[in-house]
Amino acid sequence: MTIVQYLVLVAASALLLLAARTDLREYKIRNDLVLALAAIFVLDAVLFRPWSDIKWDLAFAALMFAMLLAVYAGGWMGGGDVKILSVAFLWSGLSGALPFAVLLALFSTAHTILAKAGLVKSQQTETARRRIPYAPSVAGALIGVFLLRTVHLA
Image (cartoon, rainbow, N blue to C red):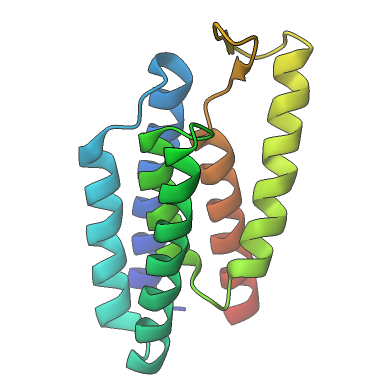
């Protein structure tokens, strides 16, 4: 990996952490952060990924976006979560989908347990469901995928 590749991943990680912090505080994921993360993905894709991978990664992310819209329509997920997950699926691509899914499940489960124990912030809704910010789990999982890639490529 080149220094430029590392810098791109550091910039993406910083944006993910900022989105996580904002979601934890405000229960919102800002559009400018998601768009910046998508723009950095385009830079990464153009500079470092083969076209054969990019087209499949785009198709995968589009499919996941369609599925996430169905989840959003059912009221199970917020719009910001759909946005950040869609961009995260771009970054993980097909090759990183399994590690991303496993890490996302681990981070989400840990966050849910901590929220139920009252150790991290959450909101109670009118329907007795607990609202938990999802961006921290997405950020942790995607940064984990970045780390796995750097170890693999080193």
